[in-house]
Amino acid sequence: MIKAVFFDLDGVIIDSEPIHAKAKKLTLDEYGIDYPASLFDDFTGQTDEAFFKYVSEASDTERRPAGLLLQRKQKLFVELLPEMKFVDGFLSFHQKVKEKGLKTALVSSTSTYTFELINKIFRIRHLFDLMITEKDTVRHKPHPAPYLKALQTLPASTDTTIVIEDSPNGIISAKKAGCNVFALTTSFKADKLGSADKIFHNYSELADYL
Image (cartoon, rainbow, N blue to C red; front, side):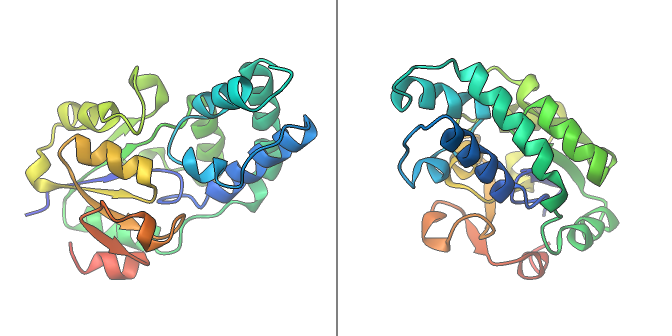
């Protein structure tokens, strides 16, 4: 029996992954930093700090500070916010979750800065019984710390909790925490999400399992 549902943010609640990726690409292009096409997928589900730390150390020949690159990315992200929208089906699925009396948590590696920007537009804070963001743990996805923190704080049991994720890094985090993971193909194709317990193309399919 399901008693709690944990949601990732990017690609699960808000269709923000393309906006994050676009802002990162624009940042790297502006600074003339070369990068492989796979770079953005590799870091989906991880913090922007981790992304730009890697770029600064491994890709930028001028070794510009990660903080400088992050600051530019954040400014571009704000400019791109009007392009963002809810993931199709999320609101109706969430309503069904609450009608069943299930506990809910948002578990994300996003920064407080980014979350507050998103919340100003979408007003999502009130939708969850618990929120775990970057500031709440020392380690971040794909480390299990965010989900372990949510399980302990809510509290909830791994036996009665499902996690909804959209990225390999997020799935790894939730699985290491002992959770059952339902993956949506909003950010990656199904063959990249193979470690999830179940894979769905949309929320309509997923709703049948509540």
